[in-house]
Image (cartoon, rainbow, N blue to C red; front, side, top):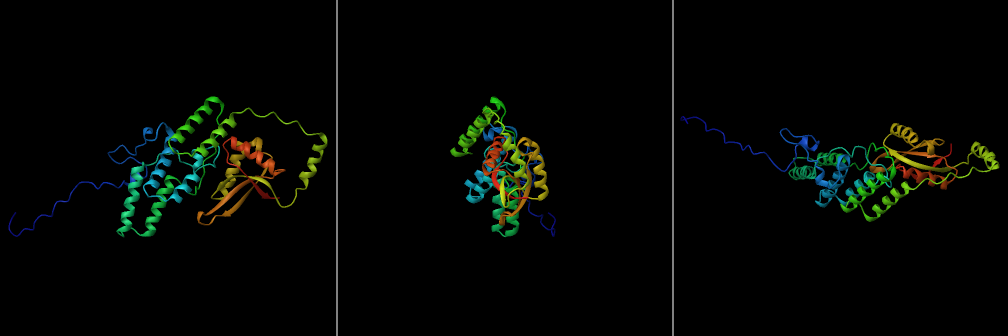
Length: 306
């Protein structure tokens, strides 16, 4: 080195930083030069296709709780909201899109830990940390879905029913379901396979003659109805009524619908879709029983007359 010349700067290590997933990995996109997110069905048992992605989300949610990256309350709320992805006959429809690919557990947990270290070092503000954390968890499994999945049809025939029972047993054996959840869904599958009851005989002519008079003057006050779904906007609720009514025309065709706006505090505002009125609370309960057999969420409720 010539005299008087400045010494060269020290060499900078070129070893990449490990332990934190890249942004492309968090989005479920292959990183340059890599194979992308591992989505092999072998990682989550015998589930394949979209079902593999659904189960992987519940597996990751459980792992985040076990690693202390998710509180028990957060785990229970997100799981319960989306349980319909595992139990379509006995739970409300889950968030739409849970069957899409998702980053693996190590990537998501690594990102959350990295964010925690950044918060401790004050490289990230509390609001920034909270916003990004909620974004990651909502992408994994929303606590308040903006759009819910369309209800699936119940199994048709013995082969589909056998597949549904086999899937249910795999979920139970994998620890994704409680024994009570398994029993209720198993019973719903068996009920869906029972032959339809014979049509009831038509009422006497005198009873039919009296029916129009009842319809002309409906009693005042809340009337028996059914709660079919909840949405984040009035437009979505109206669109949902069109879809649900078309799918279950033989049950809902003669009913009107009503959308109730409900403020749930920290969860936000929801628009509840109801159909009715029914002649009695028992009739509303019977309608719900038929709709649940078709994998449509339904709860007996009431709606204002008119």
